Image (cartoon, rainbow, N blue to C red; front, top):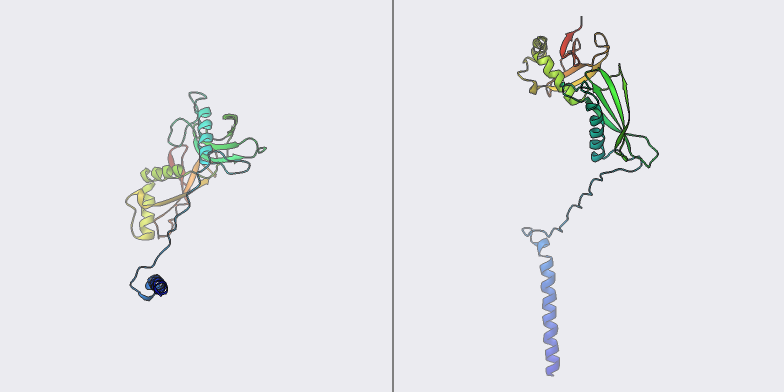
Length: 233
C-alpha cells in the first residue's frame, strides 16, 4: 500500500512538471508581451584574400601593387631625364594594371602608363612569378581613358585658367548659380585626339553638379601635356 502511494505521488509530480514545462514553452505565444526566443546567427568569417592568383584569375591586390612597383622602378630609374607623371614628378602616370595571358604556370601582368615628358604611352610587361620586368614598349598617338588624378588635374587647370571664368558663367546661365569651388563639381572626362592635341594628352571635361544637367564645355580642351586650356574656334 505504501509503495503504491509513493509511486502515485512520484507520478503526480512528474505530471505537474510536464504541464509546467509545456506552459512555460508556450508562454511566449500566449503572452504577446513576452520577448520571442531568437536563435543566434553569426556571419561566417570572411575568407582571406589570396596574395597570388592562379590560372586565369584576375590579379590580386598584392599582385597589382607588385606589378606597379616593378614597372615604376624600371622606368623611373632608367635615366635622369626619364618619364614624368601628370604632376611633373618622376615616373610615368600609371593608367591601368591588368593580367596578361600566359601558359598558366607563370603569373604575368601588363602595366599601361603615360610618359608626360615624352608624350607617349608605355606598356611594361612584368613576370610576377620571377619578380622582374620582361619588356618595355612605347608608342605615340595612343590615348587610353584618363585616370581620376588626370581628371582632377584637368579640372584644376581649367578653374585657374582665364577660360575658367567662361566655364563658371556657363554654369550660371544653365543653372542660375556659378560654382564657388571645384568641390561642388562632379567631374568626368574623355580623351581628345583632334587638333591641336594630335600628340599631347588632352581631355574634354564633363562637368555638372549632382542632380543638375551637364554644362556644355565641348569647346574647351584641357591640354595636360602643356598644362593649359585651349578654346576651339
